[in-house]
Image (cartoon, each protein chain N blue to C red):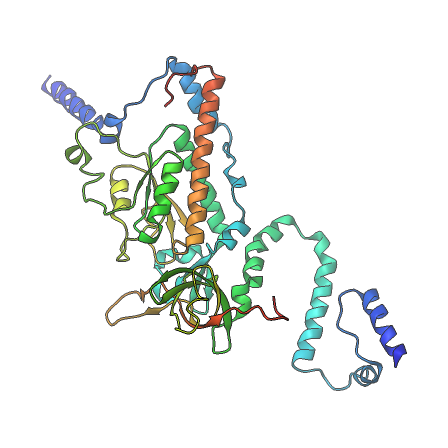
Length: 260
Length: 172
């Protein structure tokens, strides 16, 4: 008898614990009228492998012309980036663009899916040279950017610092994973702690461990960063446009009513 | 003499892309082929043979192999690799994209830009958007300090400003 009540109490305690994820609790999704139709819309992009056709957005030649394959010198190399290197020429590491193309396709595909499902995307970069570029790219596609000093508890202590019920981002895109003192950005570790997936451009001196979708590439040249910003913008726009199309197709949004 | 020169273009057209045809006097000497070719001549002959064999076998190559070799080919034939190592006779052309006082930031197609001091003589020509010639010393300034695990990098290239790119009558 006591064992049964004990186990019941334990089960209720565990159940309560499992429901208290901060991301799950704070999402306020606007439920459309019919749940069945919204489920159909959510399942629609999962039918095909490349539903948003992100592989058409770029070619290896585009990456090459934007100098994405150039890495730092041999002495700056991070040991975990060695699998992504094509080789080393005159002491300069060269990244393998065939691998980069594949990783970039995965990252763009994931970004488009997150945008389709109405997720909040945060662009992060601590490079002062590209702060304006990243912020304007985020503004152009209707998402958010954080290119200033990262406060310690921004993700991990959000409900204390910014009030209860604040919604955390659903995806973090790092245009550069290092800070100005060449240490890994704190946001990578914090996003992993909060179960938030990350996409990151990792150069030959970066640590790709905690990045969910690493994209080995150059993060120092303006041409390369412009290319990445443009590609992520296009992927997000494609995701959002397809979502609008799907909702119109299923007759959910009448003209004048607010979208997600 | 004119008969020799008429033979040369017809022969070249018939054979396609082959080694240049030598004038008749020299051809007679080399066709003996008793002494082994050395240096550039040997390399050229072997490479053109390989090229001819590849061209004949290329019809059967799969598109996948071509795509895999795409980056390797792009890289190998790109200007940065063809230039070779930076040295005292290597001049590159760059474009000024930022000016701070007397310092000009020049982008010359590599990973980093170079920061050079503008000489007082050409100050009016060297403005933002001007094309300049540089002597490249190092593509990235790095150094390993005592006790450090990795190099410290300045995120800059090291180059000397030679002057504005003058469009001479024979150059483009």
